[in-house]
Length: 212
Image (cartoon, rainbow, N blue to C red; front, side, top):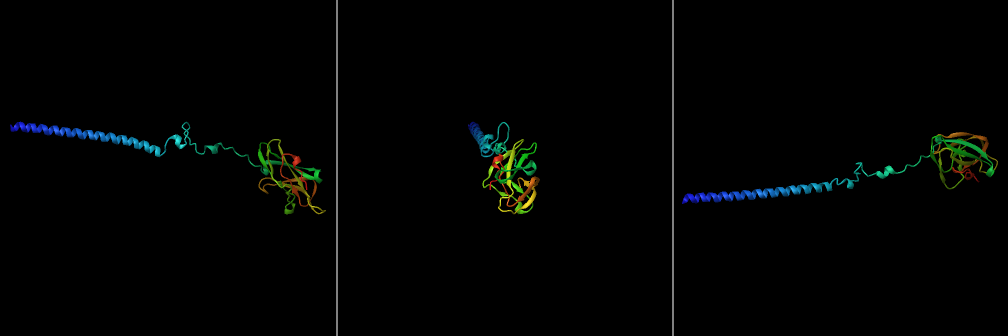
């Protein structure tokens, strides 16, 4: 009788141990699945909080380049300003308005530049008194010089009254930065200079008359 009870007690213990093992295994599997799911969620969240998608980062999915700063590359370039060395100059005499010198500027072959419609930078000598002042108050339109297009400026060598003045046989012209690479042009006649004035550069020679 005692042997049977012993065997029976042993079977009960084994059965209980098996049940406990199965419960532990089920709990471990459930925990692993939860951790695995939690890892995926964490990875997804990390991607979104970090770099994000290509669209969010401003990257073109086809080219792989960033869209940031793309507008700068598309910005139109502004044409270069004319410098003295970009132009050829000539000077002539006009009788209108008591007589004045008409300067003509033309771009050299292969050059396209923009000449600002401001007072022509001219002088008859090195003395400050020989430098032309403005004959106009406002700035004129910028002139685009290329090919046969020309710009004009009128110079009145003697805007002051009286018989005084200094004689010069040349006129000095520069464009852009004042005094950079000036060009000296021989005048058609001798100029008596006293308080000289110059107009702005214009596209039309009719606008370049230095009325006193």
